Image (tube, rainbow, N blue to C red; front, side, top):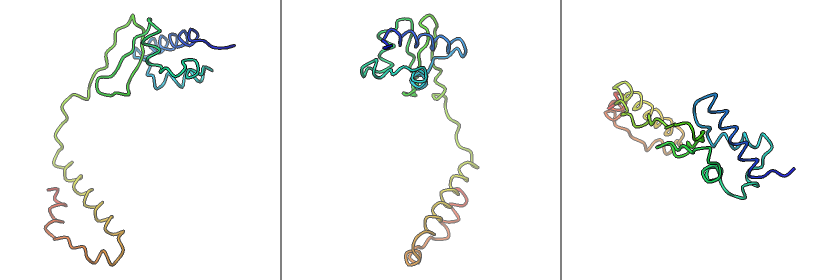
Length: 142
């Protein structure tokens, strides 16, 4: 039996409703595609190149598309009767790195640099001169 856009729309509605019932969150489009394929729908053929997001937004009025404000790839669908908004936790101010974090970062960079130098041919290593004060400053995290 040939599957139609109507069959696909009904299945997407059911999956979104089930996901909403279980999690109270939108069904991510990145998960919807594989789920539909598992159920035997070749949605790319059915939609003739139209994307899932556009299909849902234009042809399934019972569903709403939710887009995360800062994570472009985070797009989900949920029942239109429900309200949902992605919380943008990434806009919270980040804490300043502590002195210990800076020291660790500086030392990792130094050790990475030393590792890279150690992999050079012996004749090139002979030409490398690092002042002791630079090494000390890096190891102190400054």
